[in-house]
Length: 102
Image (cartoon, rainbow, N blue to C red; front, top):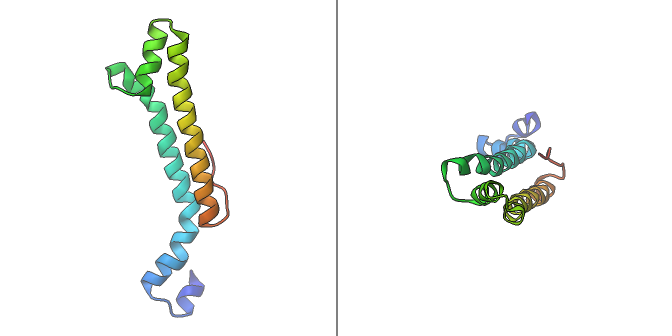
């Protein structure tokens, strides 16, 4: 950043050319953690009858239906894996460094 300022960059140029690219791995890690947390909390929200994949898992467990619970659980796992792959691709595009996965 000091180099960008020393070469006469405007504040907007410093922000877009130096600060945001340096912060991108941390931003993507925060995004990844938020999405994984939302997937995990979907099971807890199903306990108050909020529709979603968590409700499928809870109904399957409640009725001792292993197939139904597995379908809901597999859906949550696939969403988590998809999130991780997308974040990894974005991280490589943004700067080549890997984000810390959940």
